[in-house]
Image (cartoon, rainbow, N blue to C red; front, side, top):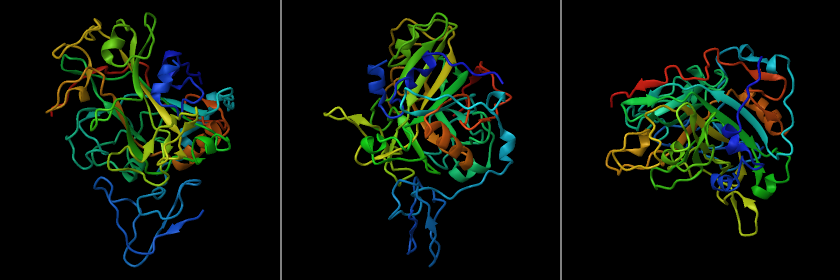
Length: 417
């Protein structure tokens, strides 16, 4: 099996030692106890009944994430019930790089890394986090990962339905971002999407310095990160350019990046996810406040927020698009300019935003439990540098036979509202 080589521009977001937990602003500037619920309780998140509930006069245990909060958990907290993969897991694992070699150490970096590449999936006006059960209500999204993702998706449906554009269906997680529009009535699909999970090893003393503990991703976790459509806050994302005549950099929007990205190169949209968690909630009313970002305090210490002190694996997501003539490269923009923009840049009832200024991403986790444990135990906790779905134990996610480095088709029609 041929190793995947990733260019320097593509890994800019994850190049520093603390890429897993440092806010993107900082990156840019420097480049068990099981708790038993004794009485009937029902909690709803975003109108969706959680998978673990109490029924009648009987109670059901809630499984906490090891190292996180273990007492006082309500149904829908901690993590959801395990859903076994409904296929032969071994058929989707191969010897790493054809020989079973073990990934190299990540040192001198202080975080372990697990990386893989996804192809683009479908486009749809659905958002199962913000508008669950309401198909067609959101702005247009580009999905990747689970191919079955729609407005009705939950952890349970993702674990039992769909293929995956991220290596294979051992990762049935759902990822989505605003669709890229070319200004001529088409959606520009990314050629590929890079994902980098990073976190301190659980034995690192920094786990207790930055937060309370380094813990695993809980089953059923979901969140939104990047531009906040509700508040207008923009952080943790940037744009880049990669290619033979590109001028790589950390650009705030499409307009600025385009000036440095001639036709034939690739425009990259990159966003870094949160690395801190409150230790119990899988979602929150704003789909953000149950997670957070570490910040430097006035004593020069990197700290998770007090409300989200548990350090989880975070990921940087990069979507890469082949540049064509429809991308205006003047570096100037005003409403009405025909150029590339995100579907979230122009929303009904809102002023048109500068192209790219509203970039954000959504994620609903749905990994096979045993496979996620492999990359957590090896790539992350042994401080290895794992690429291409290498699990750090001599095994690797089998590649998608349909994957190509160029999107096919690259342009598709904008679906009717």
